[in-house]
Length: 164
Image 1: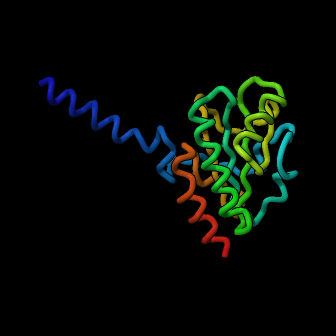
Image 2: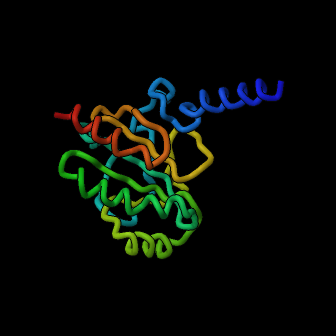
Image 3: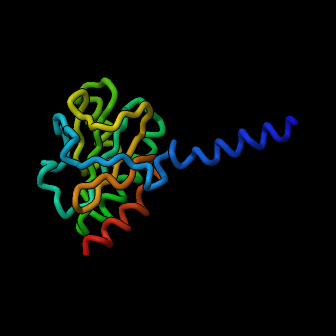
């Protein structure tokens, strides 16, 4: 009986993973990039959300006291350098309380060249509780991915292919 109960629990967990981690395209909320608010841009290129038509946009919510967030920043910097000229726009929305100097120290240390904005004005219509959290938008501004930054590059590649 215990084996059956354990099997059922494991089955439920496995089936729920795409929903929890935003992996299933059918589970991505129906939203557009223009519904997001950038807040104050403190580093990187000036970006206006209503001018991003024809670009693949990655928005990552991160924090300066979040070890997984800090670990993802160098990967995002590489992604930015690799795909910026091909149509990628990357925006890092800082989501913890910190001074601009504290945030900029991390930006400099991580050699980030993409746009960095600050909270509390940075937000979107999708609620979530953990960071890092990534949202990817296609060339038409439609939300196509809601999940973890480790899974972003394949989504970006697919989106950039569609731009051509």
